[in-house]
Length: 256
Image 1 (cartoon, rainbow, N blue to C red):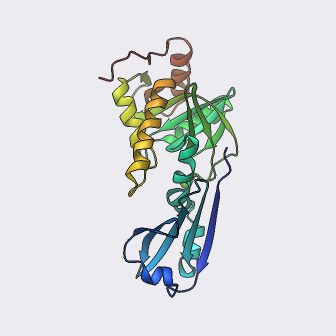
Image 2 (image 1 turned 180 degrees about the vertical axis):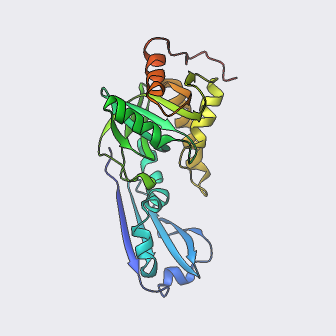
């Protein structure tokens, strides 16, 4: 993993000249990008990112919001990590992941879609190690992807300081039977991008995510699994990847 630095500083009041004079929510000042986020009743959280550095940012948090900030790891992820990791070819996926036989299996779905439950099946029946329960860092390369546990795991609280090559990214659907298939490339791409952590204000950032998502879909198996919560769901994925799955994502595959 690359070395990135996030400074968190707590301030008492809005008397600082930078904060008093700031008229918009995003501006450039002293070679920094300064963003302001309204928390409550005129209280703001500030994010300062030097233009010349891609591995550092500073968050300034009002003291009155300190407890809430420290108890919500997702704020750290959304406000700083996603932008600092992107120059290193890394993106954050709303997913759980396990390591099984030195490979990472990544399970993605909208909230409540069974990511943690499915990871638990791999742990219970196959002795897999849960890498992260909710937010997985994906390093994208021309030879495939690598999954990392990362320091933020949503409500699951499960994360490991480890990484492993990705065997497959599996999109979960609830079903009455266990069934796995490969969507058209375009649909795989849209599914993957929809579950990435994106920036609400930085169009350039999101365009770069689109590029990384395209590479990931081109180099890494991305499959869909409709499943029940039983051991056969795990077997279904492994069987598909090992016995019946010659990766179809060839360079000339039609996006439609």
